Structures are given as structure tokens and as C-alpha cells.
Length: 82
Image (cartoon, rainbow, N blue to C red; front, side):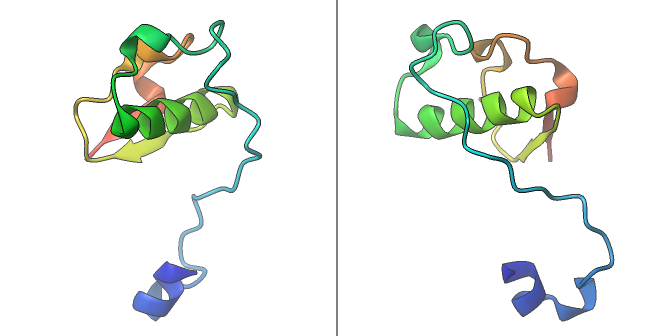
């Protein structure tokens, strides 16, 4: 919606985004390595990466410090760095 408000020319031109269920738990040690979560920013990054892995999607981010190995099964294809 924000894209449409800020960039109306983008409306319906390229829809590669998705809304996923929030069906990942940060407390699930079989999915997330708690030793790699050191602060609030990493909590968000790890959570979003875990969602991408679970839904076979990609997290697009600017932060090169997101620990790929913090999520079991995460591969380079799950994290796109700009």
C-alpha cells in the first residue's frame, strides 16, 4: 500500500511481494539458533529470515550482518542483499 501511495506508477506493475502467516516462533530451537540472536535488530532479522525459509521465499535486506546460519535450512537464495 505504501508503494502505491508513494509510487502510483508501480501499481500492479510488478507484484513479487507476499504476505505470509506469522507461523514461526523465535523460541523454536529446531529452526532458530538462539546463540546468534544478540539484540533487538537481530531478533527481527532472524525472524524474517525464518519466515522466508519456511515459505520458500526471500528476505530482501540492506543489512549485510544478517547471520544466514542463524536459521536452520537457510541458504543464500533465501537472503538477497542490496
